[in-house]
Image (cartoon, rainbow, N blue to C red):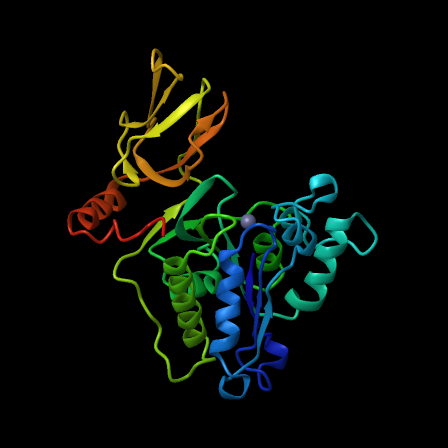
Length: 311
Ligand SMILES: [Zn+2]
């Protein structure tokens, strides 16, 4: 899913703060679709200093089939940018969307959720070394930003490289509308619009706390070495090296395997379906240390950190 904000310098005088928003790059990721529906109703084109363009559903075949990938050959639209005019289905869709809607834009916000049976903590992904990406990522106001380049062929990576600084927002679960997350995302959109001068009367909404974590640092998917029933054990998304993250047991509870955190970090994504096969991803752990760790610990102590990180 995605939202794009456009402010192409060539037409800046006429269309200052032109915005494009698009959604459902992955066909089952619905929170962003709702964000765009609400944003469309919220802003009167005559009253904003710019143009808001919303693409609620990009992966139409996946959306209709209620699945992540394009149903034909399971192609991932978000690895197919910028696409080609004469190629497979995914590349053709990507190319048409890219040429018509993304290339003419100056900024992009790309909304995603976790894949089915998992959930992801509300956070932004952005290449914070790019000053314009950094600007919109900060203005969006998510508490957590994972900084790093996006996967090759993803919208974020291609658009950012070609002059449309884009961030990704990861929010919650597939196949659901999650109102607390949708509200936060709408606040984030409004804050970015304020930062870009599209809503001159509004102020940029800085979060009470924010951590930028370099995503090239330690990160891993904790996987189930054996199959069974999964029982999550953590209290906070912050876990310390050696902490029990979850327990996997057989149906008679005769055998148990405790899965421990291999390093101290944040559980950014977690499994929700409690039945795991060997090799199944359980949790996505991103390492934190030093000052960031101390700050998150303080936030947990003061009760800020637990504020609905999963919705
Ligand atoms: Zn996605």
